[in-house]
Image 1 (cartoon, one colour):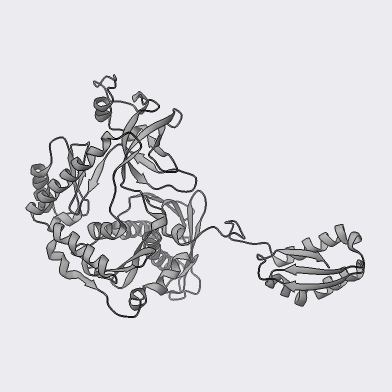
Image 2: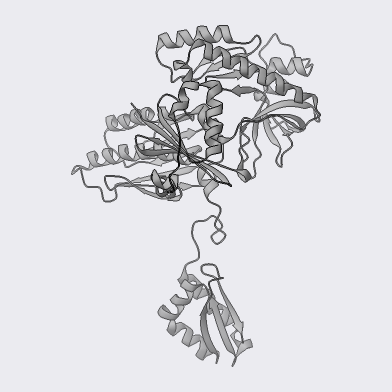
Length: 491
């Protein structure tokens, strides 16, 4: 059985949450006042314009970027009821049949945060999550978490959900409900229904307006992750501790004994070894226990992961070495996907195998490994070139994006101009401008590494430039210069 611990570090500017499984760092959540996620928030918005080619609309929800609403994310029945659509209901509708109008008001919920130049993705399928259930406002079905596998338990939960479901609404019964009492589930449904009805009053205000706001990352973590597999939730902030205890008092009182207030002087992330492990999130290269390694690169369109045997030598036969390294790499890749919250299209370049049964085994084990990940996957299989292709759903900004920013020197390329290339640029500058500064004293200011490189490796080149143009030329290192930059100053 997996043993989970949740470690929470709260400061004035941010809340950091680490999830440990059997001592391994597997998930990380970060919330900052300047980077608050909008996922789950419900707005009354106003349609700005319709893009027929995309079969979507842009909706003003009162934030900097407009929401992107695909037309197939609008419940047909709700649309026809709320907006008096004249579409016939005898046949199955198509997205283009929904006739939104500019300046029309519509209730939407954020499903994906803004990313890059893209605004948030939104839907009109509205839901309010709780600890045991998700209340579906404009659906009538009952769904049960796939992680609840026992048939008897699923049948019991379905019966409970059928009796608890409000008229005209639906339910998704979450994994945590498998250990809850029927009255706890029914009580939570009533709480969520009352909460929705209370927030519904805000829809009487003109758009755009915030109707419902998701709780902060701390309460979301307790609601979504703090289940019976978690041994302890340790938090270093008395106010945050009180907040968690108060929330659990309403939804799951028996779990309060597992919440611990950390009082030691040593920082909590250092005490549990999280701080050091956190640095690896920004690394491209991760070593595997056997000596192999993986390299993760993010591009505009996809994420690529390369698998290499490296220094691994535990297997003498090439096929066995490739298989064992690939399996070890896939285990680490699954951990990194969760830890970094990598989303979108992912391509893994595995070490080539010759036996089909080994390829099939890798695919089976990969599918087994990702079952614990809450994100949805679509797996395309392993190609004849040894490429594993899959997509992973992500709703929030990735942890890597939250912890890092584009390098102002390389502008996101990941590389800077080489020092040897910089020497060539300097030579050509003096060839073009040397006649105008003949006989002058000149200072060549450069970044420290480039200055050292010129002085130690290209002293002859600098001396030749000085002789050719009759200059007194000296080199000065300046830490204000970006790597590879230089400037010629005539004294």
